[in-house]
Amino acid sequence: MPVSGQRDVFAYTPSIIVLQATAAQAAHRMDEPELIRAAQRGDQRAFEQLVRLYDQNVLRLALNLLRSPEDANDIYQEAFLRVYKNLHSFRFDCSFHTWLYRIVTNLCLDALRKRRVRREENTVVETSEGFLDRMDTVEEARADGNPQRQLMSRQLGKKIKEVLTGLTPRERAVFEMRHYQGLRLRTIGDMLGTSEEAAKNCLFRATQKMRAALGDFV
Image 1 (cartoon, rainbow, N blue to C red):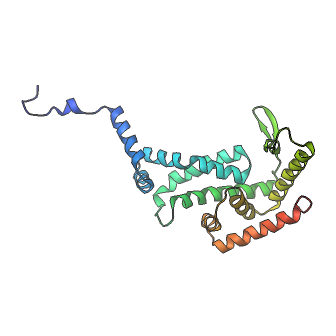
Image 2: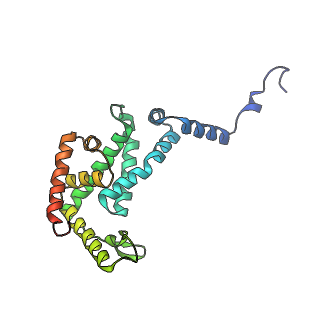
Image 3: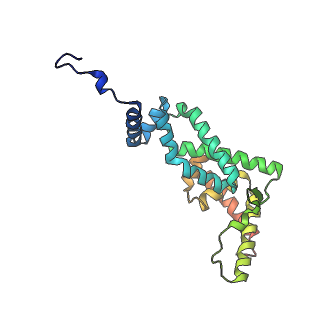
């Protein structure tokens, strides 16, 4: 029995669940720099919040670059594992977005280089429902459209796939990020650790190769 006028601290001690909920709400209210600093101090919830902020964008970038759901998922996991291991080295000298995307892009470039060595650019992949040609999943303009137009669209899609395979990993990455991600050349240069001018030149080479190869279609 506490003395009159003296607060019973045990009676007001919040439960573990309340503490967890309070911490989660605090993490949700943090802006990005605060989340990063909290995660650098070892706050697991802050790190999880950072992951939630970028997980879909990271997966989309990897999928656009690799054109393989399985490979993209592997890159997604490896990228956030590297972020977790190296977050202490982030010094805010660039945006977290750029730092993270640089990690993802470098992992994708490594994967593309390995593909070129192994010559594993087959569009057919094995899924839980059997073998599937990834090009068959490309959405047609209209399901009931002109059959000849659909055939031309499919042929064009396969030709683009062939040309992308023939580009260097860096040319392919720049082309995909510019035309499929809609990223600016300056951003692409930052992500690749190079200049905007170098990214522009790389895009020019990729575009010239694409135009030359698609001469019959465009």
